[in-house]
Amino acid sequence: MFIDTHCHLHDPKLIGDIDFHVQELLRDGVDIAINSACCALTSKMGCDLAEKYPSIYFMTGCHPSDVSGFNREEFDKIASLTSHEKCVAVGEIGLDYHWEPFDKVKQQECFAEQIELAFSSKLPICIHSRDATADTLKILKENKAKLQYGAVMHCFSGSKETAREVLNMGLYISFAGPLTFKNANNLIDVAKYVPEDMCLTETDCPYLTPHPFRGKLNSPKNVWLVTAKLAELKGLSIEVMAEKVMQNAKRLFYKLK
Ligand code: NI
Image (cartoon, rainbow, N blue to C red):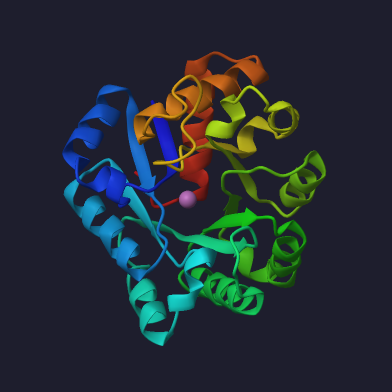
């Protein structure tokens, strides 16, 4: 019934108990979990998980905080996975100006290069943007013609104004654990504003554990808490909301079965 459109099962906090986490997500009604990559190694790890477990799919890509290691060899490894039958997107890619030091120029080059990769591979992209809204929107606008296979702003934390701009470009908006937090007033306004057919849900685990489990390890089984909060804000039953999110995810990530 549920889908976690963005998780990091390759993370050291989860991978050691991977059989347990996969059993647990299935037990709790999560039919699909999409592993989002940070570099060539984690792209390959996601691919290996997808080949082992029917419910897992994966993305391939280089996270903006990992661009220091991004070179031709990394790019080729990431690119080689795009044609895999369970590779549903290029991600996560984008800009992160939060953790110093960072190289803005290299991040922007890496972002643009991977948008190009997604376009030539006929795949959607999954965008990470932190403290970098203006530059993210600028690069997306410059590359608008290459976004025809779709895109999602993952773990959205921006304003309603940013949401409006993103939606105008045809992008999906994905909500994670912070939507359930007690101080989420801003995000709640955004979630009410985003049309039901443009919403996705995710955990971004192992971090950002939804309320009431904050402080505990996050895993894909918790995605229902985000979907339930979204259902409440939209005045829908959790079943109907979950079904809409599943349809949205399958429209965007068209390789999902
Ligand atoms: Ni992530």
